[in-house]
Every structure is written in C-alpha cells, then in structure tokens.
Image 1 (cartoon, helix red, strand yellow):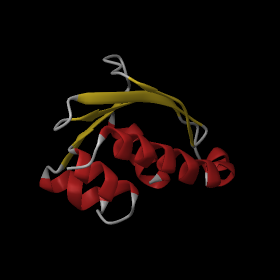
Image 2 (cartoon, one colour; image 1 turned 135 degrees about the vertical axis):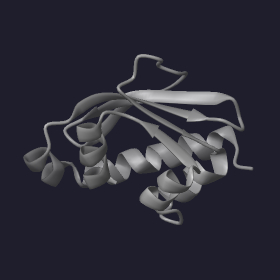
Image 3 (cartoon, helix red, strand yellow; image 1 turned 90 degrees about the vertical axis):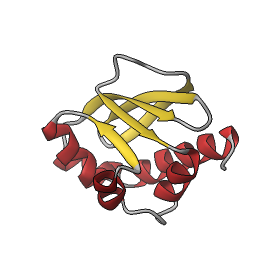
Length: 112
C-alpha cells in the first residue's frame, strides 16, 4: 500500500505534468474547476483547483463541493499518475471513480 507521502508526491507529479502541457491546454480548453482526490484505503483526501490545464493550490483535506471528484486506492492513484494504469480502463473497471459532468469528463480526458 502506498503512503500518504506517496500519494501527495503523485499528485504533485501530476501537477507538474499538467503544467508542462498548460500552454497547449489553455488554447484548447476553457477549464476552471475545483478538484478533490479521495484515497480510500488511507482515509485521506486532497483538493486543489484545475485552471487552464494546471493544477494549483494542492492542499490536504476534502472539498465536498468540488466539481470533479476522483476516488481511488493509494496504489491505483500512484500507478495512474506514473502511467502504469490507463485512466479509461481503470474508470470503466471501477478501480477509480470520477464524479464530474459529461463535458468536464471529456475535457479532463484531454488533460490526462
């Protein structure tokens, strides 16, 4: 099982990867949404803001009002960010859960 620090590091890595793609995403996406990531096996959560393809303000704790909610186990989160787990197959198989509007899901897919 991954640790809290492993999960935090994975989300920071995701933020870096999104920042690298931000210029391209900014031109294609008008995307400003709050994001919550819940890690079920550790009983923790993180939240931040997706804006123009970048993830910023990553903080410990849940945001029940977040427009996009990602729920996964710690190992699945780390594998997802490291590219070892395909987002679509993990989502369709139930390994991860993403709660968002349909248009937000399509935009999120382009970012990931």
